[in-house]
Image (cartoon, rainbow, N blue to C red; front, side, top):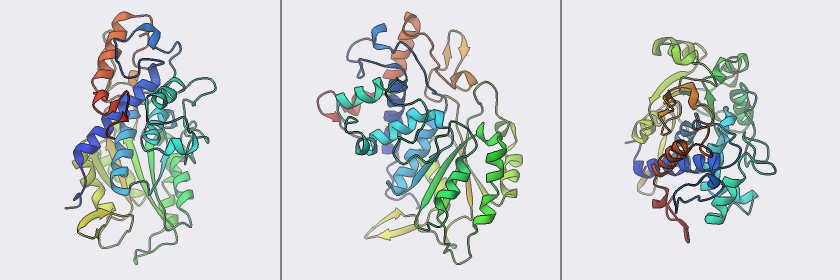
Length: 342
């Protein structure tokens, strides 16, 4: 089995923890552990950020992390989903390497939440100040080209790149699909370049409309991707076992003592040539489904802030509280000890 040694439940718990951290960054300036009922004063006076793509980012990053540990570069195309990337970097301790205030205790949690999308704090989009960020994603279309550039001449590198399906409509993103032909992959399995693992995040909607890629049939999208020289691999939903089994053909298992683990060592007899993953998930997954009679999850209205007025509207405040509690953050974080499990 390709997934020997992979703890699927641990991956699920990680999604849940990360999603909570995203929502807390978007909304909260106090009461980060919900130790009392949410109050309007706990909500930031100005809500600015993007929710809709964040669960998908957490899913892709977490599944890669389970396989490759920290031995990969992650290029985020939809940089507006920065609270998800920051949540991952915070959870893994990468943020603390460059910012000593991002500690794994209540003070550190308060610091990243209060200062997200705030003057003098963290920006709403990925930026050069973020550890390992080489593509800020504010201007969509450059992620795939950046990923190939990062892997060029570095055979030791594995570069995973997440492309938003709105981004996939840009001329730059589509032109960058041709780079797979320029990169090459000799039949020996040895290359002077690193490995690029593209993921198309097919969640159906961009900022105010459906995406074109999501309206294509599976066959039509497959043929488009195959025509560029990739092998399309579809991943439907966020089940970790399904996700891991989809990744398996692209990553060769090697034996380390008695445990089969994943390494970024690629052999032509054990992996699919030039894989291109199409990850299908719901826009705004795990968030509110309806707000004030409007469909949110699975709709473009999930793209930015899905609950607009929790500071002034009691009904929306209660909805936000139920949303936050659905992640059971108290099971992984203790007010005195910090993270119990990650």
